[in-house]
Length: 123
Image (cartoon, rainbow, N blue to C red; front, side):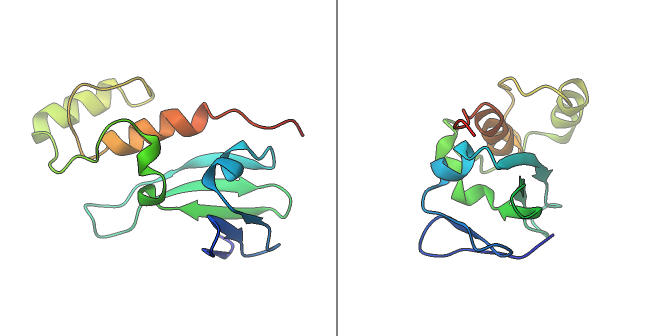
């Protein structure tokens, strides 16, 4: 992953120094494409939403905390019981529709829905 820096604006690309003042600018930029979500392992590793910056072929990493107010669901404090979460995750692995069971991934799922549906500006 290439270097990225947080500056007074929302995000700056560490390779080409392009800066996005607000996250809405970054999400609407046609040169920035969502790559995926890197999940942490039980709070031992940080979580990131990853974006490709096609102008310079860099990867931008943004923590869920910087995006969390885009989701309507509050960040959950407790995970669902393991049997419920395991069954639901197997059933809903590739589905991004709202999930009624509270789990540790509720915020991430809500943000994925917002990010993948964000309208892009014309190139």
